[in-house]
Amino acid sequence: MSYATKKLDEEKVFKDPVHRYIHVRDQVIWDLIGTREFQRLRRIKQLGTTYLVFHGAEHSRFSHSLGVYEIVRRMVDDVFKGRKEWDESERLVVLCAALLHDLGHGPFSHAFEHVFDLDHEEYTRAIIKGDTEVNQVLSRVAPDFPQKVSDVIAKTYVNKQVVSMISSQIDADRMDYLQRDAYFTGVSYGHFDMERILRVMRPQEDRIVIKSSGMHAVEDYIMSRYQMYWQVYFHPVARSAEVILNKILHRAKELSKENYQFIHEPTHFQAFFNNNIELEDYISLDESILLTYFQMWIKEKDPILSDLSRRFINRRLFKYIEFDPANEYEKLRDLEDLFIQAGINPKYYLVHDSTSDLPYDFYRPGEEEERVPIQLLMPNGEIKELSRCSEIVDAISGKRRSDHKLYFPEDALLKNGKQKTLRKQILNVLRG
Image: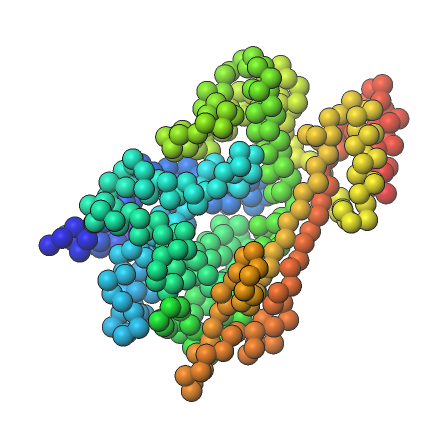
């Protein structure tokens, strides 16, 4: 028996609050879970700074990755198996891609990526193809197998049907994180009938389609996603924490470039500060290390790094107001001048933050982010794009919603001192 087809002597199961059980029979999957690179995901939160708003949101990318694997396993083993449109030889590559799709996420994910201009998907592929334990496991399947798994994650794999199972507008990744994040944040928005959606999924030559009888379950899924983004993922207080996290890393990077003498030298960050990052530097960094540095930086002599670190660790977050960049640009410039006069650095303490989301889109060739639409399989065999059949989805298709906030330290503006009158003037502008 080859390594690719080898099964465990006894099925392993993970107890899971979302899927009840996650089942592992393949030796390859079990070995991948045991690698140091995959175990690292236990130390990366799925929702970044959101735990500072929803206290239950402490779950990791490890559990999410297992969940995505389990959904894809159910697709290929329970729904697609035996159907002529599904190529059984693709089973292992799609299971491995599902399990490893988030392997390259850094600590606090998107905030960390933004500061150091990184791309977690590039690091996912680098870990899969590099000198790693994950690569050793995948290479035992076949010399070209790591490249195949990488191609699925990069969306360049020749079989687009396989890609769509991991990355599309209704994929295993989204179906897991919506339910998992709803469970751990305690909200009801992210719940939808995944069992029904899986039952009505059908493989076709280069895509996955949904039987038209399951349209209402898909509508529910899309609306759940919409609500989760605006009620959880884009929560303004979680964004405040992310703004502060972002500014801590920016400040530390700036100080390093100025040859500032840290009390506790940030050795784990030097490769990132110098833009000379080796794969091992990246893999060795996780959220426990960041939080340790933040604790130590509270005692730094630099008042900005110390203050921002204290704010993050002790949850002393910035306040915010609504902001319209199109019509209030001059207001922001005036506020920056007032902050400078008051002795408060606007680069770190007056922050414009924006978010936007497109809940569903139909195919628009040539656009920057082409989105393959959800296709319905009609009783007569015809294929129709979802928004042509659903009034609910049609109402939100192609409509991007954006939100802008201005973040600032209200407590610093309330302090007494020489600039009391000026700071009061700033508050009046912000509140006005």
